[in-house]
Length: 218
Image 1 (cartoon, one colour):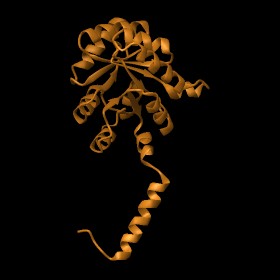
Image 2 (spheres, one colour):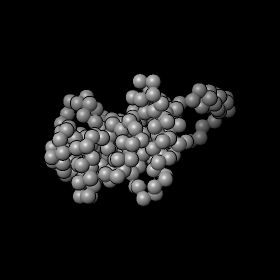
Image 3 (cartoon, helix red, strand yellow):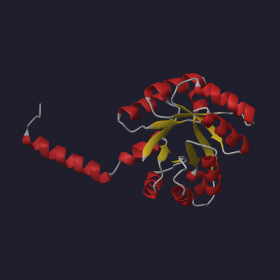
Image 4 (cartoon, rainbow, N blue to C red):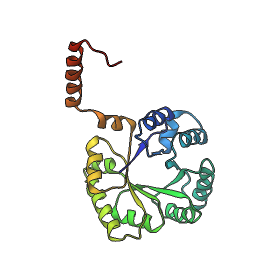
C-alpha cells in the first residue's frame, strides 16, 4: 500500500519523506489556506520534496473553469495530480485532463457508483472519504470494500482507490486488509502508527540492561 501524507505543511512532508514514509501528498484548499501562503509556491515546494504525485485541487465548479485551473496547476511541476470534485463537471474535466496526460484525483467520493463513474472518466485516483461517512453513522470501510470488489471485477480499470478522511490507525489497517491501493493520512496519524507501549517498554529494558554493562559501542 502506498502512503500519501495529507497536508500542505512543507516541513511535515520533508520530515516524513526523509523517513521513507511518503509516496505522495494530497492537499486541498483548506489545508493550503492554513499555511497563509500562495498555492503555487506551496505546491512547487512539496513537489520538489517528493517525486510522487502531489494532489492540487481546483476551486472552480464549472467545467471550463476546472479545465483552466487544472491546466494551470499541471504547469507547476510534472508530478502534480489535478484534484477535481466528483460532480458532472468534475468528471468532464477529469476526462479531458486525463486525455491530455494529466494525473487526476477525483475527490469527495461517497458511494461505489460514484467511484465507478470516476474510473470510467479516466481518473488516476478516486478518493472515498471514510471518516466523514463514519461521522454520520454510515460504514466508511464498507465503501472501501465495495469499491475494491467492483474494480477487481474489471481489470481494465486502472483507477487506484485512494482512501481519504482517515481518522485513526485502524482505518489504515482495515483499508490495507481490503486491498486499497493508497491511503492518505494526516501527519499525526502516520506518527500514531509508530507507537506501541510494548515497543517503548522493550527499548527501556534493553537500554537499562546495556547501561549495567558499562560498555560503549563507539
